[in-house]
Image (tube, one colour):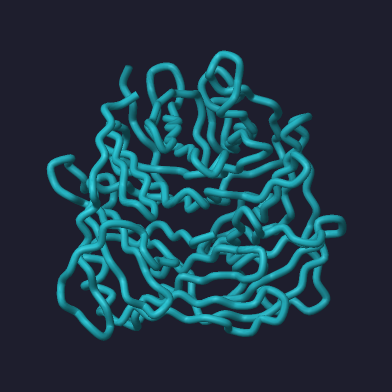
Length: 389
């Protein structure tokens, strides 16, 4: 079976100690770290999949303390790398290995896979599911589903392409264009979107639970919120482009019935479009974005926005010190109390992690990685971000 990947931009088990070079604003000398220690944040950098050869260490994970001191480790690379941090530890992967690092050290599980990722989602404190973009084959489109626990890892293959993923009631769901046996038109511009259950099915394969011709591809979300069996995110229902104004909507998928519904975003105070027409700075939500009946998201010219899930009414809560366009890739993660921003401004300023109180917008924390961004990234792209729970 031949695979050609579409890209946007149990294995042998060994327990190891992660050899990490230590860096600090106060003490730049090298050292070693053997576990998570006092790390509060994790950043993932990788080469693009087209530049990875499997012979070089084409990625790195950086663990950051609250004071900006950091440790880093080389990996084999994983484009669009996602990580998941639970009470058990930090889960992440590269193209050869799956990892879990915790307070005691690191476990690594040999597991060869493709080199581009959609998502990493926790289904339990000690279990994370990674989704990987294997690509077109002669029968459809293949996603690899990798389940990692503290004792091992396993890989399965399912049909479909899933740039939107969520965990609902312990199972992982993906949303993407219909492919393979689910294709209706054979044309990506007219194919419906489908929602599929990717774990916990009777036969271990995907289970398509619904489809919609109104829903549109474009949102890229590796951990969308799910509440009472419904997945929520912000999307462009017009599937616009440079010459078509975006139509921003609250998209809602019911994982039980497969039904899709949307609510147009409305505001009396909006002075900027909810979604830029050039397709950059797309709205970001994460697992805890939904709170008290409001979906909070990062977008609209460096702002935290709030959308009522019943009415679609949307307001700007506060602005943040970050930027996201086609050359900068700031990322936001929502926790119960805060919104945490990894600021990448693409202006030569240091990478920095900023915490804001979700209710007041007050800055409550700042960790500056006092190193030249070019040195820190080592020529790789910043791809993933995780926050200690």
